[in-house]
Image (cartoon, rainbow, N blue to C red; front, side):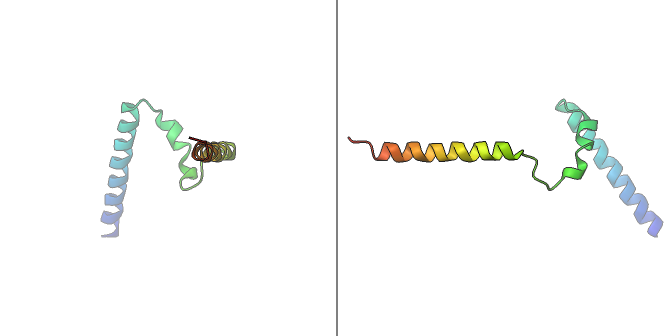
Length: 73
């Protein structure tokens, strides 16, 4: 019985992998490129420099909003 369960799990995983590969091909992505990043799941992938840049842009937007509110009418 355990063998049957293992076979089902293996079959399910093979079907899922095939579906994912088909979808990647449909959108023009290389399946090997995606497989290389499997270990990165659940980790932050954005470089810290980008995060700092986003924060700087948000700060600039806030400052612009404050400047517009304080502008004489």
